[in-house]
Length: 182
Image (cartoon, rainbow, N blue to C red; front, side, top):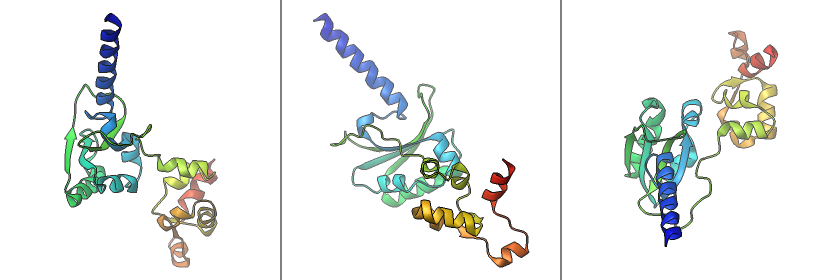
């Protein structure tokens, strides 16, 4: 009897701790999550937009201590998908989760890791380094462009090539600038 009570107590504490990690939601309801630094440093994660558009999506919760302009694309997606969204703050929340998409009830298939893989990691794993990831959306030289084309073609549309006119007005490859400093 005493052991069973102890087990229930441990399970309750574990569940409460889990809720404080995921902005007040149980992990078994979380469809996808992002860490605060992912939201602040990176572009919009399509995986979150996709999660918002699933039939299970019920609510989008975001940490209030993040810039609203970084959260806006996710809020707009939630409005478009007609799901609730909420900015939350609380001293009881622990960890670095900044955004979650959650279902109303526990999911049939619970993922071990609900946090979306960091975009930078793709570039690091491909041997390009974080410098390429941080310069998405910018014009880069032909050599760097071809490197992306070879190693990560799925990100190619996030870069533009520096053209002749750009060179004339003094635009330089931001990746080469950083590489040459080292």
